Length: 237
Image (cartoon, rainbow, N blue to C red; front, side, top):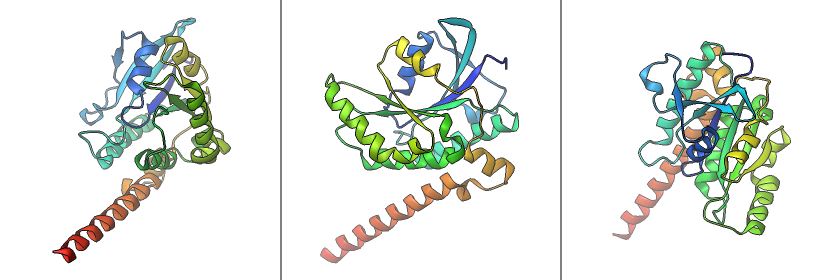
């Protein structure tokens, strides 16, 4: 990997606009690349794009499956992402930064979106948060005042902790220029993610990592709620 190459991940819930961002940045002519990793990584796409203002500078976009996927469980997605992170980290291929896309055309922060945010934070860890750009996307709305209001809510409430630890907010306007304006702000200082150091350096099982522990806790809460609901229905029969 040449010095000018910057490798970063594009994360976010399903429908947040990850593929749209990469398509805008690469002009739709996506050059999917690979690093000789095993077949389990097929759900994580590596796509190369070149800065239109500096063609000698290439970027590698890693498009990951989003949580709340139609066909994959959150556990399956975490496994897919961890496989990629472990393989690249063992090859000393550190990521320059992470773009976390969040759709702000929704009227409120849903429970699943909030869960995704917590999961993302645990996956990255505090040390890597300065390399995170929180990207807001707008789908199907032209109300800029409402969009700004939602961004303020994210900044002061839901994302306050991550911003306090160095993360930044940018808005993706669904244009190639907007995509590259954001991509150029990715840090040149590469840092490992918490999931990588926990699993590779500390030899921690995925289920015992910070992200895995959070997911297990949420699944336990969901299981207890479903159990309570089932018992309530049975008592009414």
